[in-house]
Length: 252
Figure 1 (cartoon, rainbow, N blue to C red):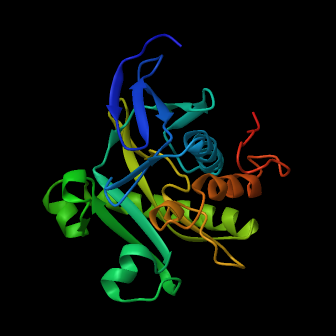
Figure 2 (figure 1 turned 90 degrees about the vertical axis):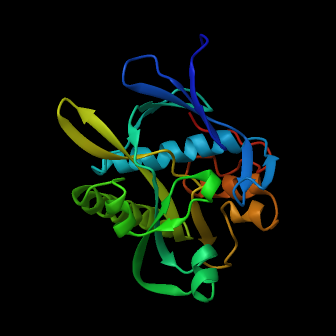
């Protein structure tokens, strides 16, 4: 592909200008980070797996009428997406207590929550993505009340979709985070699910064994991250069932 202009480079992805106005190319790296990039490594094949898994989830959401920025996959590491204005929030949906919620509230990990809980973090690496409330969001103008209503609606629809897809393959969706972007069509604004949905951004536990199949494998030194992500991809049909975990062969 011809040399492109890099727009932004994050911990796990690089964004380039797209081939057409209003598009970007999202490139998935093999880099793994945790604890606000205090722990780092390069995991061979991770970017390929996350690209394909995010394609799977975003396509599924598009098909059920949940708008996303995803247009199509370009190759094993890149996808074409709509350019959008990212709202500076991480939107977190929790079905079970885990991670920072368990630490903050003293709730044992794995405890079912009475209903899905939606939380927000302000996207700022230097500040460690602090937890914020809707009052903060309104006061600082990050999103309007109508935006917030729409964001909660989108987040819960994503939760319903992901929970069902995962349960069907024996995986518990503990929690996940998404980003939301604004797409402008003339004077009309529409909110879409942006960034990625992958084991990097979800907590996924095997329903029977409790085995972690997400980035906590890297955070907590629980084994091979590639093996965990490969297992998720295999169960979802993104990988052939007879593929070995070490060198994934992905279905086109």
